[in-house]
Image (cartoon, rainbow over all chains, first blue to last red; front, top):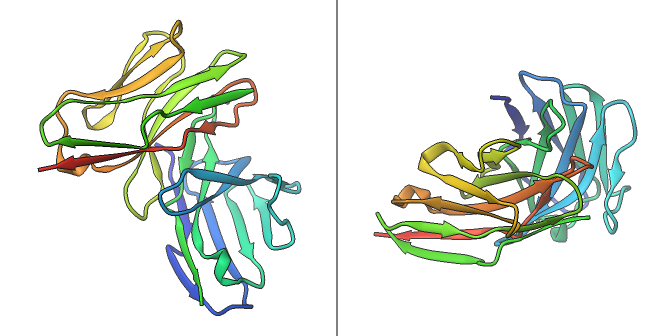
Length: 116
Length: 112
């Protein structure tokens, strides 16, 4: 099956700094990737849809200047949390849409961000 | 518009007992249905999917689900659970837009 790798798995940073999370599709080309945020004991909250070569589409209420998404190639999308604050601490998960246009997603391992 | 309802937020069960996790969907177009499992501090992985054809779908780890169009349901079942099945389970659907919609998740807790 298709593999999506997300890095780093865990990151701790100081308030005010920026953190970049990478999401790579290892064995297929992903024209569309999704970034989710997950709070404890809750479902996935879609943050944005990332399309290769174009600007990301952000969901309502998600600050595009705080959560910068870049999808520079067919195998890599990045999420940068700029000027992070403790309230940005969360579990961030990326996913890539498989071929076949059925909506099946392949997920990264997730990244736990803790902002001190 | 499409939506997914997972009626149970938590399902406790004893080891080796059968379990059913419920999922109902609504969609104005043809649907594709998925069940994903999430273990602690990990991403999600696909358990099974319904795209077309047989309404009984078998997945990994002994799970299966049945697509019921008249009841708009896609319940997940396993005849005998293990401790290792303790995890969060998400039902999802995608329709014409192919962007999936997730349910809120059901926490399966297997007790020894």
